[in-house]
Length: 452
Image (tube, rainbow, N blue to C red):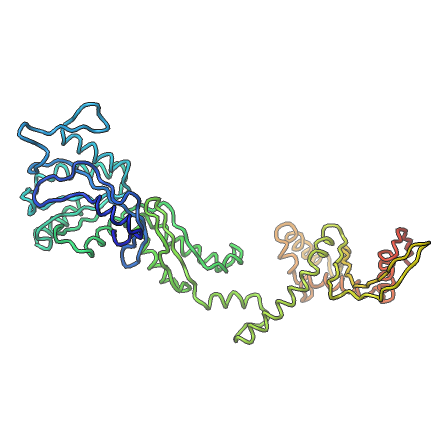
């Protein structure tokens, strides 16, 4: 932890605040120690899960065979913040340890012994060991058990470790504490971290998926596949396994743990999809698939031009949809100015300059068309009527796709509207344009129309 404290002064202060220790069964801790005062961020394990950490060292529960909590007159009495009078050291140690566990710790590292260290027999530690583990399970704190042994790889130690693992259902790590390496400590913290319960899994997926509807097959497939894997996650330990399982899904290129907030039980998994998935989605919206960079660049050019045109007409079209009439405003490049000239009105002079610019008037015309074929006998007419009425009431999409003489209904109706559009003569269209032009430029408010 110390090398990860960035500020030099904070690192020195944390070093000075470290609790004392001594060989043998002598108790050196007199009160809980928190090092450093503020947590520092470190990464643990091959997946480099980041989290903030500070250590809380406390006396623990007194067991037979330890020294330092009695003097020649019997048990030591100490003053605590929780009592007005002095209480026995062992009682104060238990109260302080319980408060650290409940109020100041997110995770526990329970240290017990196999009877090969400090001259303390195995049976002396069992009562306190079971009490504190029972308490941790009761309040739901994640924890691991350290089996302190001078011979951690001995057959008896391994057998005891396996027995404790079966009994408590949590990771039990056999290690010689006075010979621990940095790798041993990282492994212990990693195993402890993996015991945190997971309350929420956040999935970071490629941002381009946000463009697609939630009902799009890619979003649906990804959601279903991720949910199937993540539903089985209960602990942080499971997140790493789930990230590996996600990599096995055929359209996922990579899956990695982005960050873990073990205190809140929140893990974030980042997912990367294979490039061909993105390419396939793009090709869904194209008339022709893009095979080369030249094709892609040409599409971008055409899309940029289309976007410029669409931006110009967007407001006019929206106005036509809502109000029935919309107008585009000309751009600066479209203005054609006339030569300025002097004007005189009574005894006052001024300057006049005209400018002309095109505007496009979008008019919503609600057109009507019908389809009334004669198909033969009444029986066939009734059958067709029945099919059309069912589609009309239950499936409008199927209604438009109904085949009539080999042509979809929507295509037949569209041709009817096209015929009506073409039946308006060009001179009538031109006259209509001139009428609107005159009303706009000359401000004529009255309009009399004769339709012959």
